[in-house]
Image 1 (tube, rainbow, N blue to C red):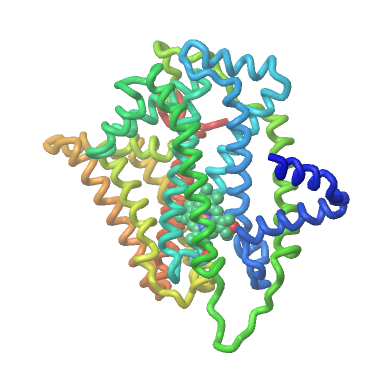
Image 2: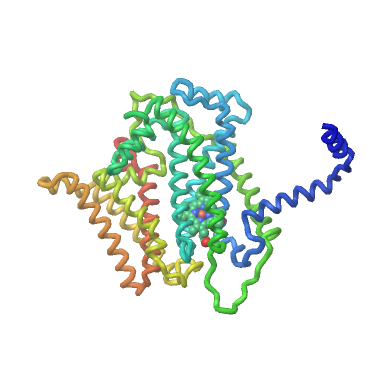
Amino acid sequence: MAEQATSLKNRSLRPQPSPSDRRSRMKAVANNLILHLHPTQIPRPALKLTYTWGLGGISTLWAFILILSGILLMFRYDASVERAYTSIQFLETQIPFGSLLRSLHHWSGNLLLITTFLHLMRVFYNGGFKKGRATNWLIGITLLLLVVTFNFTGYLLPWDQLAFWAVTVGTSLLNYIPIVGGVISGFLLGGTEVGQNALRNFYAIHVSLLPATLILLMAYHFWRIRKDGGISQPERAKGEKVEKLTTIPYLVQIEVTAAMLLITTLFLWAAQVPAPLEALANPAHPPNPAKAAWYFMGLQELLLHMHPLAAMLLPGIVLFAIAALPYWDTRSSDIGIYFRSKKGLTIAITGVVFSLILVPLLVLVDEWWIDLPLMLPFLSTLISNGLIPLLLSLGGLAIIYYFLRGIFSATHSEALVGLFTFVTFSLFILTLIGVFFRGPNMALVMPF
Ligand code: HEM
């Protein structure tokens, strides 16, 4: 006891660190943290903006703002059917900066979805999934699915008309996933329809399961980048030396400047464009059209043209193929080269042109001229409107692949660039059609 008192006394007598000592100690801690995330040195080419577009870093920033704003929102939000909507109204009107806080959460969530998808495209286009990076590619796919689930579970929480009906449509889509769809939707809803159980389950998943998994997986994703030898780089001739720069200050000053600019833009945007809040949810009055959230509109559009089972299987097969890319495109010599080669860029542009022509054309043809169940009445709709369009779509993708290989004398890797571009842009166009060109009863309309 006496010893403890003496040591405390001695400690208080010890000279206190001067402010400049404290500053340098804080700097040392900050540097230490940075060097846990980054290597001490990085190759100069990796610093070029065009190499990564910083999309993984930007996604990290949005995830950070999302989680921080979400924690603050939890202090006022009430996950009950009777009080959820009023708790949001209270937050928006009575709490200082409450509306801004909600808006920040809303926009950072949407931005995270967009930048994560763009990051996936960047990694694909410069072959960042090659040479031992398959695990991180798969972790990335899981992260993207987590981000979608984050957005989807958050959508219901305001309990307004938009939330209620988008989630009703979204969970009804889940039911069409073979074997597990019904189980997942039953688990999420805690029954058969969107009500108190669903709100409680969505909230629990949104604020505990998803953030914890996202943080853990992100940490693993970052660790793997370093374990895999850093950001992928083009292969160099033996003996060729690449100039290296120290992370502090060269990389860090770019990251801090970019983060400040992005945060300022987000704040300005969120202050001008509040998160939407429609009328209180009314299960008796569906809006017309009842649309899913924007990121599911591509799927909803497919459902208008195919049997639900086919409309779920097609994106499922495409997602599986994208996940399997590291095992499908194993050529490592083109790692770090955008589009694999100059020819690859031409092929990618061809993929964009194909999707711009084919997708709207097929939507129009199916809408106005072709009705397979009517033309083939002797077949069940599962076959006429499901199996046949599914096989035609997969056959069409195969034809595009072989067409690209033949016309451009493309390598397997280059043809996959064209196919991937066609698929991602088709999804983009289907989403645009669903969001802007579908009106009452989901009929095609002009948006202006
Ligand atoms: C929450 C979502 C995600 C975050 C926060 C994140 C973060 C990052 C960061 C910071 C990097 C370093 C390079 C850069 O900034 O581009 C990176 C690299 C990487 N990411 Fe992600 N990522 C996410 C999702 C994804 C997705 C969806 C994929 C692909 C399916 C993916 C696959 C990869 C791979 C393979 C690398 C190494 C790339 C290379 O070596 O060039 N990540 N990620």
